[in-house]
Image: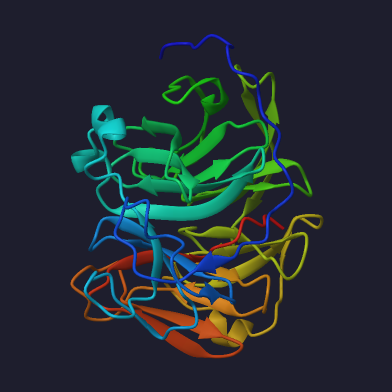
Length: 336
């Protein structure tokens, strides 16, 4: 792997920023469609839609969304896809952007960014709402499954079939390819927790806490704690925004909460209703406490996708017409 020179100054992560989005339809990569209608008061939802090969930010107040531009009230607030972008042409998005697998909102140096990965190997950090590329790389064939932006501007990527947790020196340039790596079989999720100042990563059998060391242009990763999962096939890892010091953890058969200070799994409200097999993503809205779940839909043409998202407390559903959603998250930059 080429080693990059330390030419860029590491930036500092600012406090999470309250988000207000305006409504309207949104064609992917159209810079004029993100802020052109009435404000949506509730926290929006972001999803990776494998049918359109796009990330969509959606109006939570609507029960049905439509990515068709001709829909009079699509509920799509903003979209992004790597397809057709000249700026990413060198990364072959036709192949590397296959099956978008992750989408998150993060802030860095006062700016907001979409973090996205695809199973084809593309990992990208893209400005919101302007879509400028902060960093992007083709990570290989290891099934890039999750991504995180660290306070120094570097980027962590978890790859499931590759079995690794990788930290790229993204702060050194838009195409920085130097990285450090630790093995993690079945790596599916990654989250930077400002409370513990640790990078948490989820594998098929373990939840690990990693300490990031060294300068930003030459970072290192050290495993400082490892917890065996109660059940196998770890999948999603996300902060419990309504309870500091906890993480959502999903496996092939259940949904858990993990207390970082106790290094153990703990009970939580609505567990008997929420915990279920095959949950691809889960999170709670920091504004309302409502819980958002994405799980595969029976009979869907894509075995791991859904056109319907489930909400708890209050209960409800949201549908993306013709959608093949893999994960869905609240569009918030809060980390804890």
